[in-house]
Image (cartoon, rainbow, N blue to C red):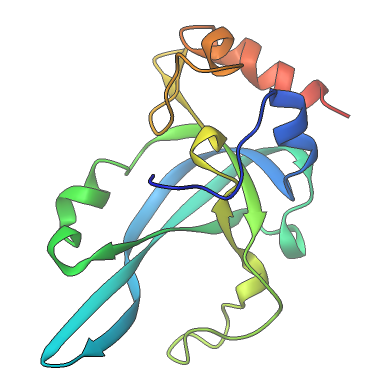
Length: 168
């Protein structure tokens, strides 16, 4: 994920400093907001990937408005990266998502006035995605050989969910 602002030394600290941690399944995904930057004769367009997650259970915190779905933003991605290959692989993914709320209740997409920014989240960092791969925990975005992730990689997904749920 490149340079990250947040990085954690323990699962407990990551969970406690998040706004919400949920078990959920990706039900849809697609590119949304575009960021256009022009310099000289060159124009760069980056896009945000929005993933909709159906919430199975809330392990920590509260989902905005008690919603049963959350939007999770990834990116931005360069124009060259904005192919369906990037998001199609996410569909049906079940995982623990450790999330940070994106912002205040401001409408970021005038085409969808019902969607407010406070219902939009991002991962706290690459460590905040713990996949369920046939009942086993996988760490797809961070180096699983670093820190506390070593103890989670390959463990029973059910055990990891219980561990996250037990964090006060």
